[in-house]
Amino acid sequence: MAGLAASAQVRTMTSSTYGLALDTVTSTAAHYMVSGQINAGLKKNVEIVLSATEISGTTGGTATVECSLDNSTWFSPYNSLDSTYSFTLTDVATAQIYRWQLTNQNARYYRVKVVGSGSVSVKIAAKMEATN
Image (cartoon, rainbow, N blue to C red; front, side, top):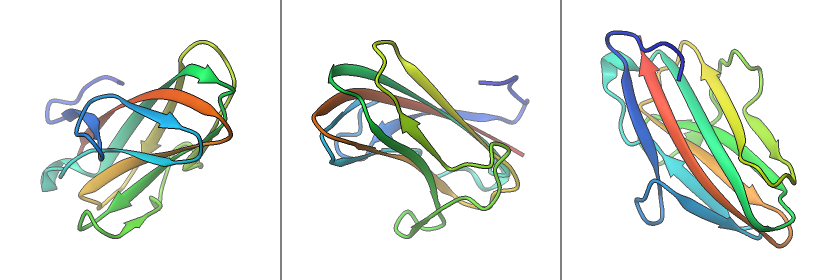
């Protein structure tokens, strides 16, 4: 993560299925890494980093960041320094790192949605930093 501000909240995002720090994306099923609720005073600027490592198959698919006010209705962030909310997973043997920098946010929850393509098996992990 970039230089941590004095009031930063850093957390490991967890699998929405098992609550673990790692999850495995298989075939075309959607998997989510979630943040849990962000403190109200530490939510303006959010940086999310996703690591995706091929286990087997031909890696492909997308990774998309989403936000929520209530942990139920999810939407795209409305401001990003990267000007993109999705990345395409590519077929490489080493870990791929994807990073989103979101500014001026008001959401209380964040998640990364990863959807594979074809017969893929990919290990995913994500971390998040939220600051004023």
